[in-house]
Length: 111
Length: 110
Image 1 (cartoon, chains in turn purple, blue):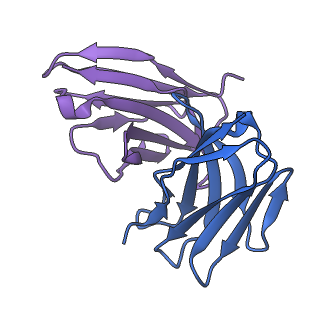
Image 2 (cartoon, chains in turn brown, orange):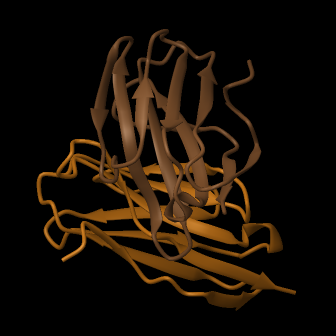
């Protein structure tokens, strides 16, 4: 089992560009999450999903959109990237609201 | 008051030392508690769950005090490989999700 994988691992964008981060899990988990981690801020929840076709806002959803068209995939989109979105993005999945398994992260820089 | 608070450290200890981390949480309705470990530039990984009766896993002991809304992690006989950031995590926050503390950094020196 690969667990939770994220694509890409690194990305550099210019302000205003768009991109999609892909998260995939092979553990048949219902719940999936997107976090961002910034120095001194800890992990902050962007959006989450409790099942295929459902999404909900987390603590810091502005500037991001998500989709969960398939149970195993959770996509995070940035429509118009801003320097404030420079961060490390982690995807996670879980069976319920309990232990979460994290992907290796995506390091995004917005210039 | 922040939902989950931890002393950021860093805690610099020699090998073999015993070190304790504390964490407080604000939501008295919180239901589940965890300690995660995060190595530098890596993803967080579950270290252990925290049960009401306290629990131990080898050199690691976790305690929960619901009355004081306080969680602790004790590491005995510290190893160099214990160097990492330890995240206190609480389920039952205002959004019904896991709420992560900012982490406590531990550095174990030879």
